Structure formats: structure tokens, C-alpha cells
Length: 240
Image (cartoon, rainbow, N blue to C red; front, side, top):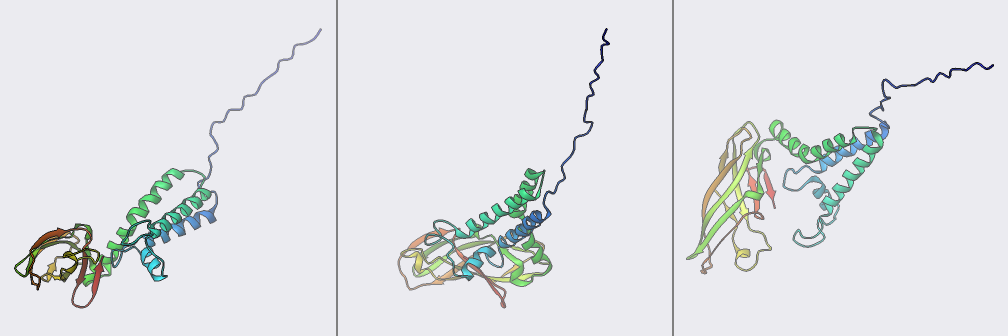
């Protein structure tokens, strides 16, 4: 006679799942953070409209675009995107989890941190023309050439981030690639302007009247693409 043996089955139930640590490789994470700082610095636009990476390309003698007059592929932007890809590669190797959240944070930093750093520097350290920013994309000039006089109005949006009143002389030039009559338009020197402190944008509008030898009658206007120079009597900054 055989005794029936009761087989006892043990069920192993996890009450708490093992959690992965956030960081997989500290070295890769450090490389990612370092390159991210480099990308943010290269994307800063100061003291002119060009990013530091664009100034770096010019300094070493590399072209910014594959075509003429700013047309074609933008090599500096391609280089920046490549660096961002390297940042994401090392970030992926350095982290075990929360990678998507970190990706969103990285893209937000790349898009907003350069402007924030520039404004912070202007508020704390800059003075005179170096504390003033121009929204070049919204500068506009309308003109009429009649009876040997070029008359018109220019609007220039400017912001003074410093804590002091700044006097600025705006000088506006038409780009060289304009053809025919427009390419011969003179440099427009507007009336010196007082820009209030506080970091609030102010749109300045000023009229001009310039005697010219040309007797033909023309009229027109231009917005983005105008070359802007600002001087405080000591220093000069240029947007083109």
C-alpha cells in the first residue's frame, strides 16, 4: 500500500519589482552633459545676430552656407544638430530610465537657455549698446524718392536689459544684393534715441529726409534683411 504524497508547490510572488538605477554609466552621462553645455554656448547669439558656432565657422574660414547670399544648406546648423545627436547618444548610454523626459529637457534647454544666458549677462554685466537688443526680423523702413529727396519712416524694436538709460544712434543700410535703384539707396542715420531700462521692448519710429542726386521717382519698403548698426558713441554693434 502506497501512501499518497502531497506535493506542495511554493509560489514565489514578487511584492516589489526590482527597480533599475537611473544612471547606468556615469562617464557617458558626464560626456553628454559636457557636450550639452557646449551646444548651448555655441547657440548663443551675441553681440550680433550670429550664433557663436557661426562666428566659429567664419573664424576658421569655413563657409556658413552651401550657396550664395545665405542660400542652400546651413553648415553651422548641421554641425549643431550633429552635436545634439552625439549628446543624445551618450545620454542613452548613460541612463537606464526616464530617457524620454531627459530628451524633452535637453531640447528645451537648447532652444531657450542661450537666450536666457544672454539676457542674464546683459542685465548683470553689460552696459551701453551691449545691453540693448534689436529684433532684426521686425525692423522695417518705407521710403519715397521724389524731387531729389529720399524721405520715409523706419521702425526699430529695441530692448534695454540694463538698469540704466541708454542713448543709441540707429544706422540702417540696405543689403548689397538689392538690384537696380534700391542698391544705390544711401545709409539712413536716424535721430539718437533714449531707451528706457527695465527689459521691456520699445518700438521706435523715426522719419528721415536725405538729399540725393537722383531725380527719378521711386517708392518702396523693406523689412527683414535690413542691416542694422547701433552705436552709443563709444561702441558699435551690427546686425546683418
